[in-house]
Image (cartoon, rainbow, N blue to C red; front, side, top):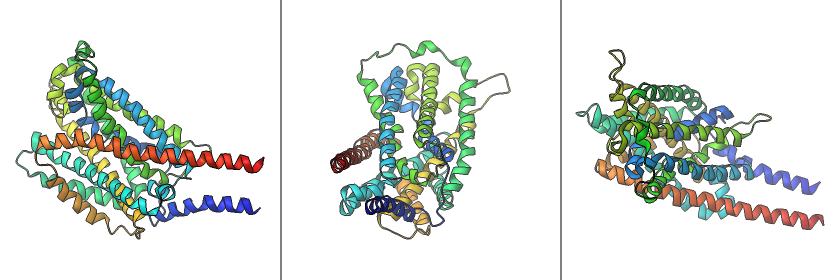
Length: 395
């Protein structure tokens, strides 16, 4: 009886830490909403941004690079789900304390938060760069930075349940507009543009794999902070739902990449915002013309949803790491910090390209992926020792 009581107490402790870390109203989401948030996070702004740098790096092999990067993301997702199950639904910060100690968790948590700040600011800056370069060239970019981040702060402050309900509709709108453009552009596709494969060897494909493994597929290690908020019903499997959602997101990123290659061939790597450029080429009699505004809407929706999720995760990391009261007071200071960083972090479009498509993938793969793999290894070793000790006690 005493042994059973101790085991129950050991299981209750992580749940208590998780409940304290959650919002004061203990808001939770169901499994379908979590899967929808994963789609919003992975697809986000990547559906508009990723085809250009990927085709510039890998050429016709871009879709192969993305497929392999999806495999890397599946490995990371498997590790995230393993940690989630082994630690009874605790967050990354909570099981980091258990695995490496409270003292070592502080530098790890701060590194995690710095990564999140960079990601949120990059997403926010991309909105301003898009509008000032292709639509509203005389409008200062900080106008878009401010409006976008304040909207994200207001949404994140309302809680994850409100976000999940609203984003479910916005996600389908974003996908509808993107798919509409790709379908209407069918007359200009030339499948022969997909060949030849590996024209310059395997190195360009590996370069594309590096980019897409970091952005967006490897970013699943950041999304792990949202898993403790899910409320499972009897018979539901979080693994099955997230694998399906992640695979659907990968498909929705691979298809636009293939479409831009078939439309522009080798020139696809030179056109920024490839889907936007694809929408400009659509001319079907006088009914379907000037479709680029639709892609603008898709970009706004995707970037807004991803920036909101990142801001919410930053907030959760801070209150869990420093045991702060969850009263949403920090949400607006965090958003203001992101606004200033968005306006000052990137000196030029070339600097943005280097930081987002070179430094950021390296950081996600080495730091984010490395930490998750380390936690997975430690958890596996501890669990194996526990099983061996239990067998020894039984014998």
